[in-house]
Image (cartoon, rainbow, N blue to C red; front, side, top):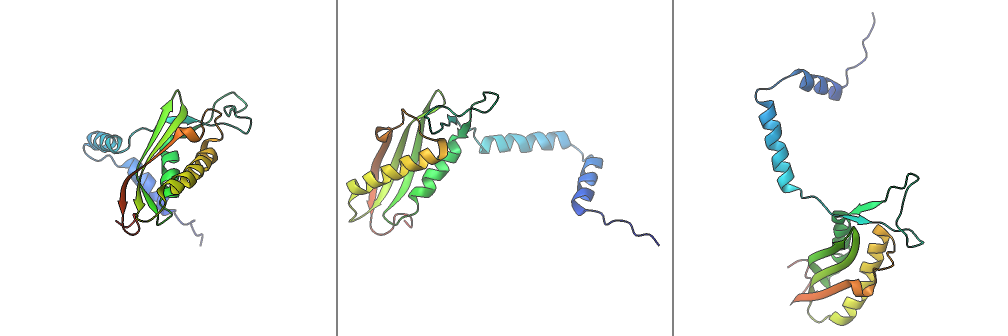
Length: 159
């Protein structure tokens, strides 16, 4: 008595989907894709740099680019980690695929030295940007603009 190898459920589902031709599949597919495109907006590319402050290139000469969405997410995560401040808005300024500025609107906690916090946060933001795209020689402390748009009692991440 020979046993047949077990059928992979994923493979079985893939074959069934390929063999089935539901009514109006084209219309359904187009509808799904158009909704998806309206939800996810394209992200601007940002040029990455190496330790010599030149753009990163592979063996074929292609440049390395990082999605602005990735950089924004990293900066947001960094700023949500403390009870003294919370990001209200993050704006990246990109010109010719180079990150030229970061604008941050923050909500601060009442009683915190906002000037010292901004100075510390600027250094942290610069380090986070460098970790993502490397060190662009034209991107310096003056490229990071921090503004406090509100002050609240307690942890601004909870308000």
